[in-house]
Image (cartoon, rainbow, N blue to C red; front, side, top):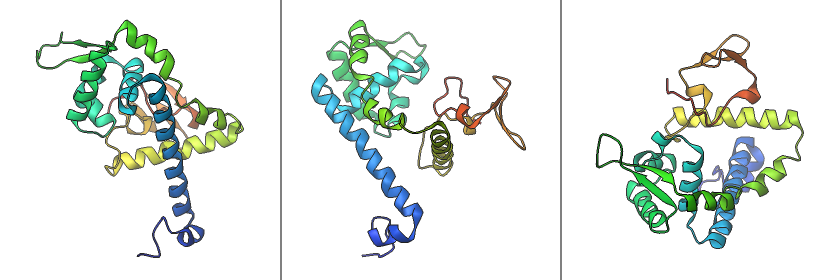
Length: 201
């Protein structure tokens, strides 16, 4: 057994990065717990909840089996199975109007939109804790998280990201960040992690 493992408490005391990774693991557990709690209430699996929430808040061209598999880092058959169940429950509509008759995009049905009102808030217990931090603390935390997400994407660990840093409209100036699409300087808090206008560099 390696003494310098991230998960060895002695290693964590010597290395702050190891301690932070352990903290991030705990926070990732929070998402699993909150998703499972919500899934028991509404009778959907965690991945079905994630798919519905994604469809509700993202543009149609991202709402297909291929992209959803990348988004949630699962296989296409896993997404297809989830979609079948959501379809059977009447929560989604498959739109085959594209030029390729084998492909479809997924939209919420009326029942699906009602379901969103019950499930979209599953992460609120985490947000309510963050709301207790002051603005400078939140801005510093956000800056670190956004840079970490970008770096994980650049090294191939995160396959999908729509953050400013990886967008063709983003420009790094000497003293500031700038969006060429919005034609405005970006403060650290303005950097987006999930931008609707994102276009990969």
